[in-house]
Length: 302
Image (cartoon, rainbow, N blue to C red; front, side):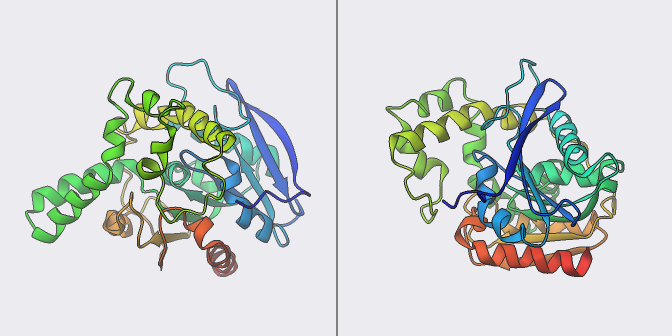
């Protein structure tokens, strides 16, 4: 996996009860791009886009609370979405100024969090454009599933069942001790078929140091699922996202099925949809294309 640019600067930013590890590169006088990583990754998952776009933008990424080099919280509900939204806002202020704005890009849980950020009428004022990859807004997911089942439409019911089956790993996280045992050193070889797609470009994933890094990161971030999946944000109002939005859909994503995004047009005023022949970690497997799509979208909408 590519490394973040050597010319990047790093620092810790205090946010609520944690210290967030933040990396930046590029000219701060240029427009800013903030990358939000997902589960079970850290900021490094954006290395290719970070390096490529730093030539023309002020690029920013950070480890979410308790992940990577960011400190964990002692609070019981530390991974509630509302707390992480405040972390995002703090990072924008620390890197772009108290009135600063960014082009926001999120993948997986980074995308889930980004949706909550841009649906909020206050937070969205800090976002110039929004690019979402492989992560739907939680509130809409549950509402869409209910609507699909109640429609009795064979196609919609099939879509809903398909997503439920592809989300099996989420439900397993609520079995006490199941994932903690799965991630023990003696069980870690199960991680690839259970968590990662077979076409992932993980390189040295199976060496002991890499396994330890990923399993440790996963244990700390399980709270994202356990504190939010069955306690999602409220449904957004129609057309409540007024930020120009790009949705990059990975056609072969084994965790997020494309149909889950069908209803977003009702909530986003300006949305552009792109499909990529790739799996879940499209920013790794199709790195140059993702960088190109971000750059072009910002150029048109930003």
